[in-house]
Length: 167
Image (cartoon, rainbow, N blue to C red; front, side, top):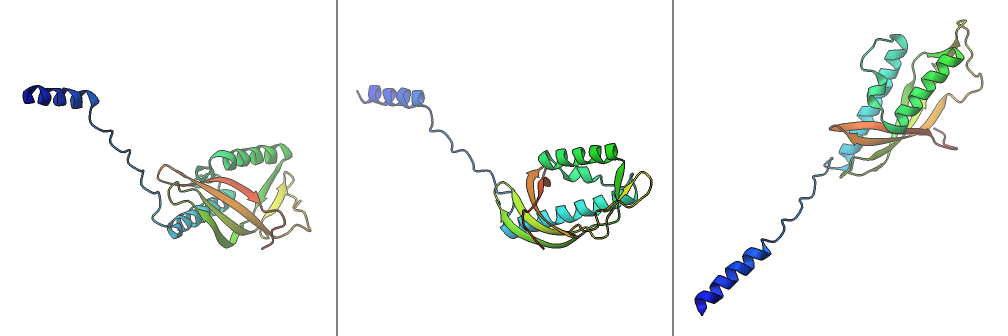
């Protein structure tokens, strides 16, 4: 009888199979919030450098759009089309005055910064070469910049002016 019992146990456990293996938790994208913020700031500064370089030389690399995805890329493409239709372009550099870390998800890489962006040296020029920059514009803009983790790095997913934000 013990042989039959042993055989039954083997058959029973064989039918039940081994317990499922736990699904491994994917590793965090960043080791800390500080690391996420540093990566976001580096990405944003590289993007602004690329934008400024592209204004001076249309063939400059990297292409500023290579830093953008989603809503940010769509908004940039739309702006370029509108500028072309209006016969205007931007000349002159812009610069980052300050960057404030807001939030970071170390697991997904989603990061949010607020940036103070100085546009006082940038001018809007029409097809006739005339400066048509609004005279009383605010020379500084406070922007909310949202990043997503893509292809082993951060990309700018969304940029928006902060309502009532001053910097």
